[in-house]
Image (cartoon, rainbow, N blue to C red; front, side):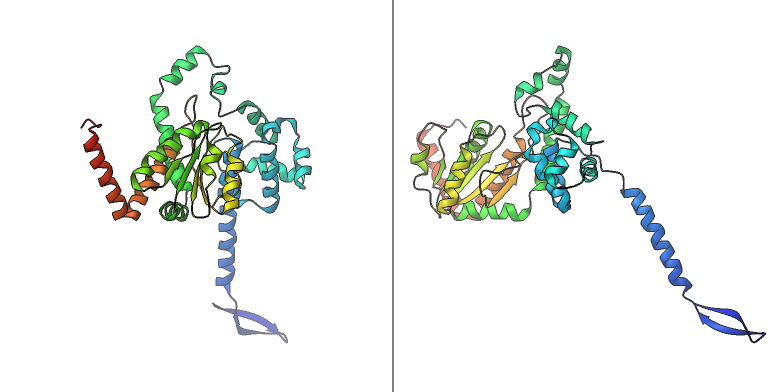
Length: 331
């Protein structure tokens, strides 16, 4: 943009053309104004839900180096978090107290004391005893009748689960289940019924599928031949058992592929896993919900059936012929 300027030279006014980028200055002004507006809009902390583990896992990929150290310290001391001060946690993470305060506010808490208080109140989640502690009879009746709340919770679990799981992880799991010579499925306590469901579907599609027995049975004998050509499918849901770690370590040692279905509260996985599928299991009542994990297994097995093609179809035909021969199913 050009403007006409009057310049006084040797007592006379002369007109000169001065090239002055008013457009550039205007653009800079608008840019700074927009940046200030963006800051005002985005600076308030996003409202977050869930326990501290779930909040940390949701933001873990966006943490700074200092926040990552704080997250590791917080998760490592989660059961006894109420016993520490913000200063002590900051010292363990090697950051300032102010950084620690900002970290917990980013997680959606008003302050570290608020986070500590909520964590103390959370108690031992995963146990149905927690849901009944200090609950009045009227509250129990109301909770039992809240079908809408239960349905909404399960639908949210499904949506959050499939949003978390990447298509690449799904494809990797399907490929492993297709190519593995044998598939060993392990699950204990709450994960047992999920493991049984996976076995019931997989064994219809392919051979070499084995449900690992429970603790105290023939576990060592069944896994003695596990090798690099096999797959270990693990259900690692809270409340977890110590047996999973040595089992997965054994699979790592022999080179077997490991697929783990777990929940967002798993901050430490049982040794190395090739594929991790996190299934949200937040319950609306006393017990955790496994709707999402069942749906993930259903999707995996359906996709596997299409991937196996003729092999799966022939096996299903043989199974149906045997049912017809045995006469064991009522149509």
